[in-house]
Length: 358
Image 1 (tube, helix red, strand yellow):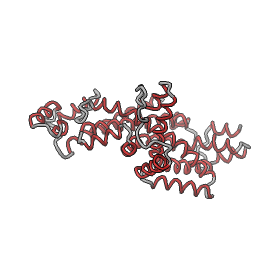
Image 2: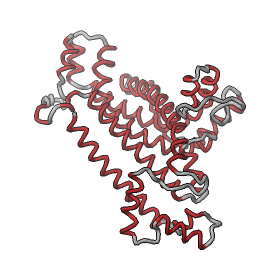
Image 3: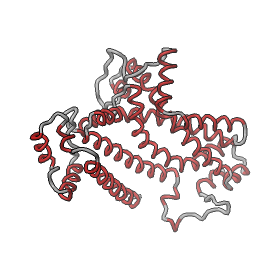
Image 4: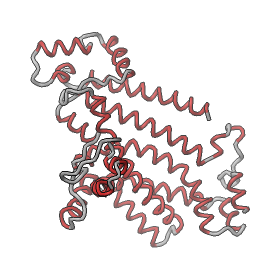
């Protein structure tokens, strides 16, 4: 386990170094003068020269790069032209709201996609399977911004059961503890504020989850079909295990191993996709912050947003690897000590065999 973690951390450092190189190159190859962008559109030539000297932009590129990496290691992402605050402070204030949205969307994603994929696999080739695949194709084909606008039109404008935009109703406030509005309402012991925050969160979360449900449901269906055709599933049925036990305990746990990889990658993708969703629903988060940074030509804010999303993506992948270790005990063993695969291609795991025999 320790060796695995060290190897993954070393790989992550290489990935983050590559991300630092890419973002540094952004400052060099993008059109315009980075010093002018950092100083602001209305800055004088003297102010631009002063900013260029302060940031080291007047130095050769081989001197700028180590300084850039050093600043990143110290957590210095520069100063936002628009807010005149450190970019890291701005992102730290915006990120919890985006994480709240991503976690809610991921919860909806798993709650819908996993049962849908399992049911479609169990009823493959039948009407329920066809219906599930049509739902998946619809979710994958609908643009996120269009779905968000339609949900607003139906549930906020026509039915009036959910709020249109924002994170809380007009005049309602909750103390900022974590930055996640719904969680802060719970911690403050205000159930009315929690209900209000949850109602504001529902439509954006559904919109963000829609496109990702399709991918997970297809992966679960494919993986589950492969597992249900395995020898150890046949053995489990032959020993008299109930169908629920066969599907849920023996089938689903093994089918979720590749799905956990997809879910981990989706965490990073979802955080990037908040750019559209937060703009449509008027929520404050790193997506809305990045959009404003682009519109204001706020170069360091844009780069800071890219870096933070990249770091979250890397951390999510490390967590996924740990979850896979928990789901699949064979991965904790050295490759030479792993049990041989069965003739059908699926490994005969000790735990599964014992479960089937029981």
